[in-house]
Image 1 (tube, rainbow, N blue to C red):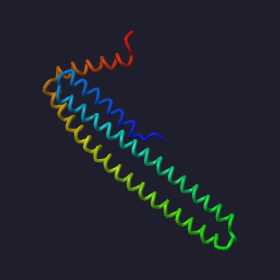
Image 2: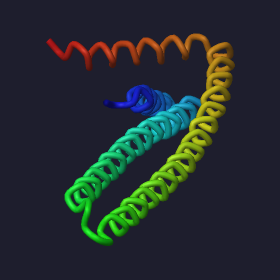
Image 3: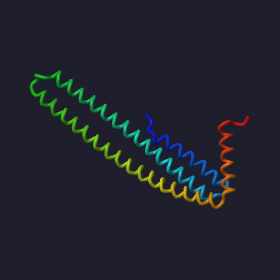
Image 4: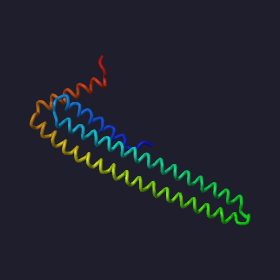
Length: 167
């Protein structure tokens, strides 16, 4: 299952690309910078969702493998019950397998926590940049309302062409 952060991140990334391109086209440095910041924020959020998906998948694989190994050890143990010394060796092997599973699970969780922290920092940094860019855009629109309307109209027309094509 795809994480929702991947979807919203991709949408923000696309919106940032459009806004950055519009800023480049109109010569608006603030729109261009805000668009790039929004694009980075979307990339970070998308990456965060990918990391969550990867960690979830890896944890499932480790858990499945550990269960499989445990089942095999248990089956081998059950097959050899009654043999002299075999029970003791099987019990030790089972304990070692469980210890390896616990170590692998701890390592995986530690890696997931670190990746989560990095993604969260990137997301927060992008959010701050987006908020600042939003404030800057608001000031630009207030200072230059006609130019803002022209840019909005051009973007709407361009999006309309993209969506409906040229007939």
